[in-house]
Amino acid sequence: MTIQEMILKFDLCDLFYDNEYGLEKEGLRVLEKNDYVTMTDHPSSLGDPLSHPYIQTDYGEAQPELITPPFSTLFQSLDFLKLAASVLYDGMNEDEYLWPFSIPPHLPADSAIRISESTSSEVKEYREYTGEKYGRSRQLMCGFHINCSLNSEFILALYEKQENIDNLKSFQNYLYMKLSQNFLRYQWILIYLFGATPLAGQDFIEQNKMIENKAVQFPIRSIRNSSYGYFNGTDVKVRYDQLENYIFDIEENVQLKRLREEREYYGDVRLKGGYGKQLRELLQSGISYLEFRSMDLNPYSPTGLEKEQVQFIHIFLMYLLWIEETHAIEVVDEGMKRTLVTAEEHPHAESQFAEDGIAFIEGMIDMLEQIGKKEDLEAVKNYQKAFNDPHLTVAGRLLDDLAGPDSFIELGHRWGQGYKKEFLSRPLNLSSFGEFPQEKEEEVFEMIRKGVSWEKLSLYFE
Image (tube, rainbow, N blue to C red; front, side, top):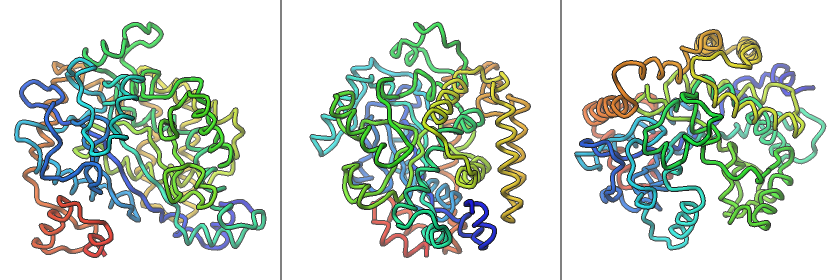
């Protein structure tokens, strides 16, 4: 039987639906007076950004990264992210705000961009190396990483019903590899709908020599996912057909000095698990979750992700496991080519693959009807409309707004300042986790600021 046949026959719909999600959001602290990326230190009130569990820094000192623990829904992850963002704003300098776009605003010279300070000399030295190789400003592009872990009860139940794989760990790896392959095959749909970097400021354009590539005509759907994105060289090839091949290819790229070390591989999907930092440990532990890395920040939301968008992504990932296609390497490569083509299309142009996108979403709708999750149908159908009207995509909406008197920088300033006021003025909201007295909400806020471990903090949410 196929996966979808087993889900329906053995009533596994609820287990199939309930995955665990965590979010990682990169941002930039920017000066209000001139919209330059700030040169100030990470807020000292938030402790060590290398060890804080929820608020760290990414590549740049001005690049905070918000990290959520895993939750049973993406909605809860988004709500926790709002809490962490409120804590971050509370600790920031009064003359700074968080930039709402993935592409940076005004920048100093590339060599003057501050690399994140770290108590680890090894981390600092590695960041200096990547700055030299890829450019510092390119690494200030921000976005979302979505971590997804399949329901362990679902994996076990499905394993016990199938007859082809006789080892639970191998079966779990099979499911995650299938999800990885299908994501790479179909992520162009997410880029079409949610790509949100059609334009860039002059500083970023000049530092990354974007004007020299006449083949790419701006605006486009997603600079971050285009040939100007933060990617490894084209000589770095990694297969996703089997876990062993994924590990072998990354290790070989390190041996051939195409990569300095394993973590320099910047694939759109990373396989996660293991007990340490070495990829080879995945062979013993098995894959425990996937990290999806291609989402632009959505500037129409204070958190960078709209609620309906999160709902769609959840269903999208479920459908990647539901469909029975098993992609050969060349078909996955074709999907990755579609991602690049889609990223570099004009935001108001019809997708070259619109017919396939509409059919894919029709399949999502059919899946929801079969598993009895009709409450999600409206959100999915709304996004299907965007394949008939590119103006409904995030990049399409942005281009309409940028066509007015506001430049890219002016629009980012206005929206960013508005979001800052929201985060600093609105009360905390923990309603998605249950009923919280106000004094408990304040305790949670303070525990996040201090970086109290999730093991202790989770007691409040349970």
